[in-house]
Image (cartoon, rainbow, N blue to C red; front, side, top):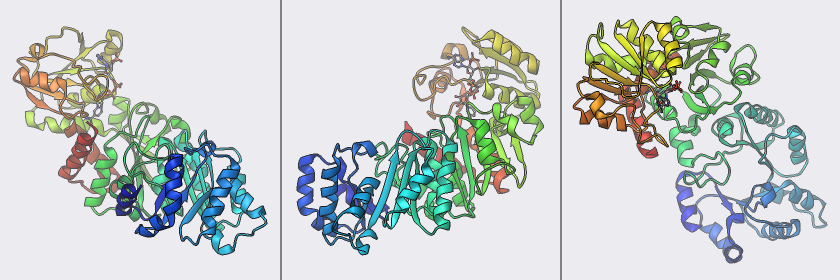
Length: 495
Ligand code: NAP
């Protein structure tokens, strides 16, 4: 606990000590020297002793929790005490009235790990009716729109001049953790280490401070983000936040885990119907929403319509505009090949990235052939763009100047050791281009090197498409080296 507290004081402004995480024998030991321990800390602490039914680690009945808090509160400590609503109610009705000065150290809290309760506002009122100085509500966000009632509660607390901590737990609630303090939340929680958070969806204090720079976020901050399912492991926040910083733009980019894309666009995004007053400027769209998002936009650039997918939304004063920066992002790194006109290019795959690649290559008059596993699906795409379509298995790719992988084969996870083609199929091709960027070096690229081909990884495309997004949202040109370094550092951390 001492080591953890020391580390926490290097990054946090307050330290939460989750006493319920201690073993009974450890707790006894800590109890006898807690005052001394707290004195030794350089920061103020919040003491928490959470029972299992409120998401804690300690099965403790009401009486033992009550006695625990009575003991703590009877000592002259300066810490904050996070007590659940039932304990606060018990303290109110007890014979020994707690002095007001003691209530000014109490955070009265309520947790719900299943979802956002229908009576959230009533729970807030119950908390507000105790003499506790600070109120806390942490509820599970199962979709990004569950953040709405939490932001609404923060607005209410602000107007009623109450200090409130409001958190949407789970990956879908990340927006409340990052934007909460700028909307009046008394604090936000950050884990000391990845995977060691004390609540679902908690990101590290280090990420809150260095990746999202929450200390700089205010109501004027431009908000951008990635819409996907999942969205949490994307390196787009690393690229865009680094660019905001380098270009001196007051902006933040965060992941939005969105299941119900229609509700998200209606209730949180579209300026004419959204229920939240925020400075939303732009969205990146990723799987599985790139095609469905088209339905919710007021205008779509012709390239995106022809490709059949948007990966970028610009939020205007009154309208939503859609773009596809994947096409331009894919083609830009191919500058190294020179003129693509008439060049034979093999594109492997028949999904969204393949569509963007074929469209962009055709703009440059390249001679494209598709290689697919599912002939029926591939033929539909081939017909749309009037290109030929061949089966991928045993494909001979040596006659092609450029071979592009637009499938997820080789991506981090179960497919990491897979490749759409082996060295012997590639020998003779000039350049092999893998759109997969995580990992940076894929099996496909290694096979290509074995075959003596030049190679190009997907990170170059990732940066190029992100730079166009950044320009669309801010009007500024992001430095590619800044975005590249941010993405590759983050990817190396994941591998
Ligand atoms: P998608 O729409 O799901 O399409 C994936 C395509 O890959 C489908 O045609 C699918 O075949 C094919 N495929 C999947 N597994 C296969 C296998 N085992 N053998 C043969 N074909 C297989 O995905 P997407 O959006 O096009 O993305 C594809 C890849 O491009 C992803 O890895 C993504 O990370 C990458 N990408 C990179 C960038 C970048 O900036 N570098 C941008 C966009 C995408 P079926 O048609 O038979 O299902």
